[in-house]
Amino acid sequence: MSIRWIEDQYIKENSIEYREYQVKLAKIAINKNTLILLPTGLGKTTIALLIIADILKKSDKKVLLMAPTRVLVNQHYTFLKEHLKIIDIAIITGEHLINKRKDGWNNSIICATPQVVANDLEHGIIKPYEFGLVIFDEAHKAIGNHAYTKIAKLVKDYARIIALTATIPAELSKAKEIRDNLFIEHIEHRDENSPDIKPYIHDTIIESIEVELPLIIRKIREHISNAIDKRIDILKTSNIIRSNSITELINAKEYDIIKSNKELAKTVFTAIRLYHALKILDTQSLKAFVMFCERLKSKRTIGMYSLLNDQDFKNAYEIARGALISNIEHPKIDKLKEIISNERGKVLIFTSYRDNVEVLYKELLRNGYKVGYLIGKAGEDGLKEDEQVSMVEMFRNNTINILIATNVGEEGLDISECNLVIFYDNVPSVIRFIQRKGRTGRKSQGRVILLVTKDTLDEAYSYISRRKVKS
Image (cartoon, rainbow, N blue to C red; front, side):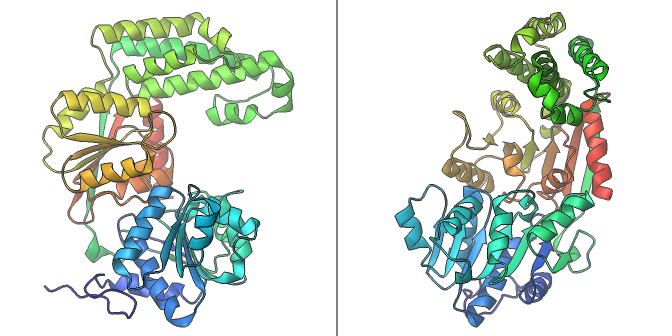
């Protein structure tokens, strides 16, 4: 069957495939401030393009398309340059000096990061009334004091506002906050079951594979749990917290009594670090756990002396080091290698911690796989924006067929269609679950495998995220 193409005076011929749902959503959004909820991989940027082409016919005001990272902004800029006939399209991010930004703002279409937009609006370099269309990509970021919130407040009286995202939080209060912060009048929602979407997606099979911790890692876990329990008991006795919830502990950091009582502050901060260590042990790898413990030893922050001298913590660290010397590792690693040994297509592996990205990357490389990794730019070991783009391109053109990614691979990046997505760890966030899952099942039947460590935090996170997706 021949492809039907979009025909428009501002869009290059034989450039954009005609999809009824994209055209319909664009027509609706052009007439009212609209939040478009569309699963990952179904062309939110294409809808933005259609809306931009329409607004160019009706207004001589500027168009602003924002995304939260430079890599995403560059991706949108490249897409618009590739498909639009007009040439005055600019990219503006925080790395551009003020003179270059001023030149950039003179273009008809500007792709930019929100922080630089907020700053330039605040300093009068640009005026809110200059814009006729403002598009907020990854709109679920518009919570609290995010730059998106400030920008929407300034442009709402002058520009059509379009918000794009794959999902919004399960909590109704946060969903309402996003809607209110972006002055949304109408919401258009599509999912995998929507009739106009179904022709463009394929079923995704979700499989959960459980692993059990060996006795020696369970012993390490017992020591870390004991160290946590001692501190939880102190905080409960002092009426600081009522449960063992990590959320309660994090909130407790801001209590006045914690800020004024050094001993209680030590207890709260060390308990949080121990929870973090437990999470790494449960969900990542023994090597990542040891790396985390060794990093703690170099710190001189509050409560660190008491933590490093805690006998349970010292025991856990020494047992873990000994286990690694004996070539004992988290059972997920062997299970991961078993899974991908039978896979001939593209595999995307999500893991939440950089240390574990390094562990998995080295292990798969040692086993002869064509593997790459994708992490954020922060820190000495981070990937700069151009390196991230290069890694994604290598995955897209099959130079590598396995990509290990942190959450930088979850949002927005135009990562090629995958045959298999593996959740090496599980996340309690509905947004992250849906974004990970959306990396497969678009061009052919998709597979998602959840690796779950039994009787640990990993199991709890898996349950929470899937329950939230249903809600």
